[in-house]
Image (tube, rainbow, N blue to C red):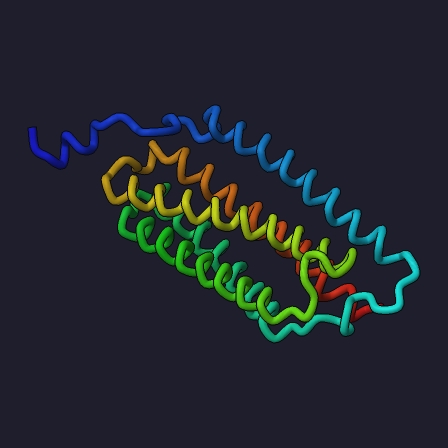
Length: 200
């Protein structure tokens, strides 16, 4: 038996042959619960927003200089994650590897820019309700991005080892689902902290 055939018959480290495997439903439940936490945090922000304030946000509406390009970068990473998932369903392993790699790189760039934006803020976690909410919500999102990057790295490694094909791709779909959730949450965070202050 050739090495390639032996590799092809290895058991998957996670997941199953079915698209909606137990892991898919578990990820869906995780997304619902994490989505609820983000909803509560964003509700707290809007609650404080309608209260009387002398300086909300501190220093006026935040700049879009870093936030807007960073949003486009994260959106592009969702596109590459979708492309990677489509690639393995079409049996294109090289495209899967490239798609996962691009998604990882774009996610890492997003994380780096977000950290740089944190450093530029004139307020901190303990300077008042706005700073507390901003750093808590964006920090919570950054933690989800970091988890997603670990997941993408593992998926890339398993893909490189030949664990996935057009029939055995549930983990890729599960990972892509999580990454799309991370991107969707950022859209809500971006609209909350960067767009709504401009509309007031």
